[in-house]
Length: 150
Ligand SMILES: C[S@@+](CC[C@H](N)C(=O)[O-])C[C@H]1O[C@@H](n2cnc3c(N)ncnc32)[C@H](O)[C@@H]1O
Image 1 (cartoon, rainbow, N blue to C red):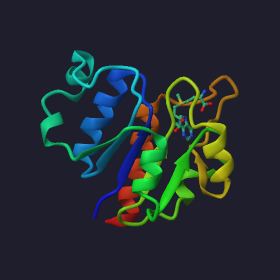
Image 2 (image 1 turned 180 degrees about the horizontal axis):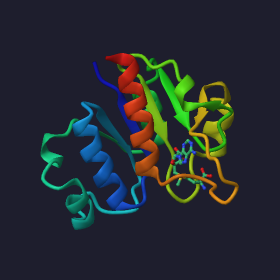
Image 3 (image 1 turned 135 degrees about the vertical axis):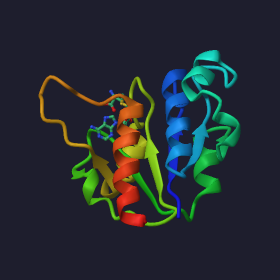
Image 4 (image 1 turned 45 degrees about the vertical axis):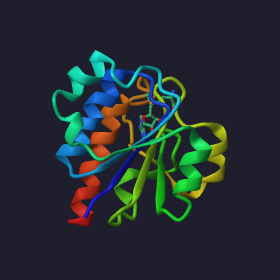
């Protein structure tokens, strides 16, 4: 039983390192879609992912089209602060793909529009916070998902 964490064009190495560590701890597969905002051997990524990176199941994609082509039959949901449904209402299933956007601008408008019925938000209870840190958002959703698939 496993979930798939997808990071589209991640920009901050510490976030990707932390999410790598989280993927390993939660038994999830990490999918990284290029271009990245850092080099994959960046010491900040390694430091945040500690010595765990070599044990991680990680799949790389050259770009977003490559990702969608390779996974066209996958059961996917998309995470955005603009989602209309709450993350605890995601119909989690084994092998589901949980797709997250980049730190600066989130998911592209075209992805949001094409998947509006599969767009989920983690509710935010202050008007002063527009979104969560990417690694925090992944943590919340992945452990909610594990409750349902295990
Ligand atoms: C820092 S956020 C991007 C912020 C960007 N300004 C936006 O409005 O989408 C990076 C990613 O974390 C995830 N994320 C952050 N806060 C979220 C929330 N409240 N609900 C769902 N996903 C969230 C989304 O996948 C988002 O694309």
